[in-house]
Length: 476
Image 1: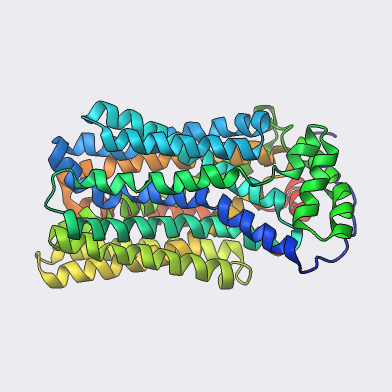
Image 2: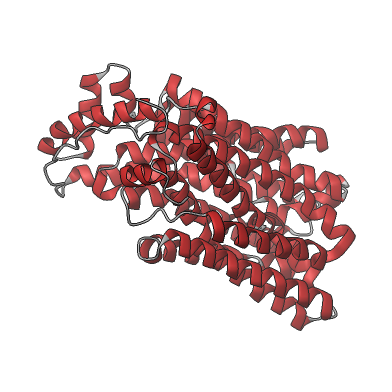
């Protein structure tokens, strides 16, 4: 295959129709167990929102150490996302997910018993390793077990599980704060809940099958067929073995590209655009609200108790926006149009929060107006920018560098996430909400301009057609 030309892909095999039966219920059970990984991802990233304020008082955290507590998880996640590829290859998807469950459990345990900042930071890094590995492993496991007809819906369940995990973290934090808020170590009660879904994931995965694609790749043909027979009707399972072999060859090709391909101009441009898009998703500041929402609302004018309860609204709107995106919007609106519209709305809301924080004195009206703007921001973010950005990234890169391009983009996402998360309490302490959201507003305008000029539309065409279009000099 010459550089600069799209890879030839094997002809697709006509498969018998998927039929209803016990195998479908088995697949749904597997998806429920696997998405505990997404639930843990959401819960462990969201639980700090609410736990951080009592933690500050109990451990005497400064704005800088507060940023470190939150951002060290994200730095661990960047490493976990990179390392997960090696674990998935060596151990398989099933054992990797069991390992992730162990990391979640002991990372949460370390946070709960931490006597001071040092042990807490190490434990947060361990949790981050689990979060990053889960972010890369769960979607792969679901995609490799799902039939073509259900792949989008089953893979989308992981995104839904993540935001449900965050919403549960906000709600459970509010309940615990209401009951035991007078205890100095109430934040430890909040964090100990993280251990429960980790146990469920570990024991649940014991009864789950391995990915048939991984088994076939390692020469375990009979085991791969046996797994397919669990989740397909028999004629479909036998016919799909040939399809799995074809997909395994495509995946081998997808992992063949690397830094050397950056010398090809059109591939280099796509990778740069992909990294920018992944970073831009974090520049919206979505995780500042998901991690610091309670403190943000307290700063806006709510009491500490009211802020932790009001923050549950962010979790609810996050779930509503994600569900609307996955089940209604994502396949009906062009990716480019949806993403640019999403950035326009989030940037507008950043500007409004900046104006409210600057012009209105502290009051109940100001607090509720900031809450309304925050939940509106979360809704548009989840509906237009969460899943659509990652779907666009998965479609944008040619097969040869798809694994490489996604890996670099995810790395950029976690690093930018960590930088913004660390900076939020520091900037807010010095410049207030108007300073932080003013920065988000200016960065949002820059993002809109760059994406309007350079972001390609990836929907409505096959992956092969997109690759041919880009390789032949089509507009990127």
